Image (cartoon, rainbow, N blue to C red; front, side, top):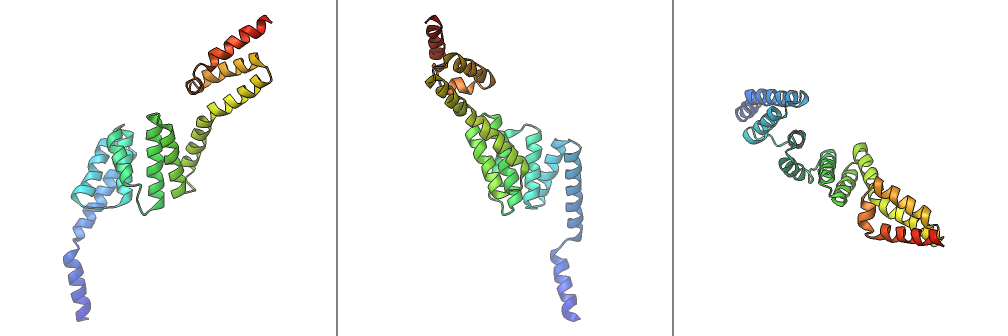
Length: 198
């Protein structure tokens, strides 16, 4: 009995029961601020928990990053998400990579975004948002080459007008087709003009 009392006294000495209450209260305030869209307050509460109370939980860091993301504070969002890419929790790692992918996509860094989505899926294959983003972006990146393959095939068959029409439609849909094949549209247009005079 004496040992139990000593153990409880030692545990109680090192653990402040009021601290746990303050932490839980701050977590509730941070969560409520975030869910109500008050991201500035949420950021303040998350910083209180992380910086002042020294609570090092990946979920808090992730929610802090999400708050920065919602305020379009991309610099702090990127720093915070990047710090979570090495998390031991695969779900946190996956969400961080997914969000970095979205941020890279917004900056038109498509290859980097695709890699982020791929890493998100590697961390958590059940992350359906990352899967959707990966597949959609992959199709977007593959589209110019796929369409040019079709056009080259039509040109080999001497179907210049059809090839030109498809190319023009593709360029309107995705200007990247023209950027990756500079001058091709003009050359094909010239061939169509020559071919129509024969």
